[in-house]
Image (cartoon, rainbow, N blue to C red; front, side, top):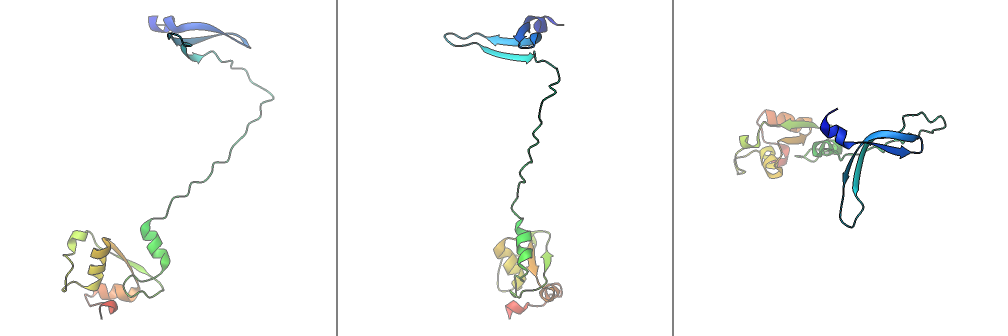
Length: 137
């Protein structure tokens, strides 16, 4: 045992008898001393002990914004309800500034500042075939 450890070794009286522990004590003027103990607890088994297992409360996290948009089941271009797909681009920087020469879907993505657009299959096909969308007409 090192000198520092030997300096803090002490014996405390418990209801189960004397126990050896390490104790750090800081004396204070006009107040009770600060005492920190490590050890000194009895390691005997309590036969009549009852264990109470608390059921943890589940934590609910808010849905991701894309998930909410998908669950609405409505095309963000033509506003028709039904099956939807997600059109995605790599970067918003791929799209130029909004202007007259931009397709409708690009303008919507720039305005919403989103790399994804929830669209119906027909609008998705029109986007990939570089044709104006129904909303642009």
